[in-house]
Image 1 (cartoon, rainbow, N blue to C red):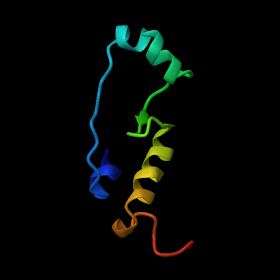
Image 2 (cartoon, rainbow, N blue to C red; image 1 turned 135 degrees about the horizontal axis):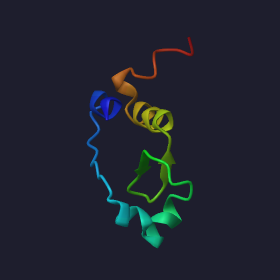
Image 3 (cartoon, one colour; image 1 turned 90 degrees about the vertical axis):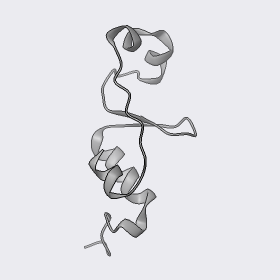
Image 4 (cartoon, one colour; image 1 turned 135 degrees about the vertical axis):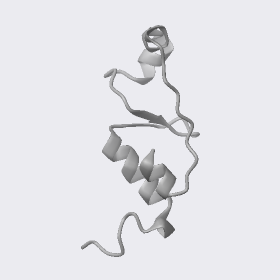
Length: 71
């Protein structure tokens, strides 16, 4: 959420109940059952907080969150 805010990307946070997590449609998306999970508008899923932060940083290159060079 911090990286999304720094990249000026609006994110909707949903906290699921145990019943929602147990739903078969949700389990089909989240096979490993771990959180966080980011579902993009395209339907693609990104797991793990570092991968999600990387996605937000790359989505907003002008933010400078990925740095100016490989170093």
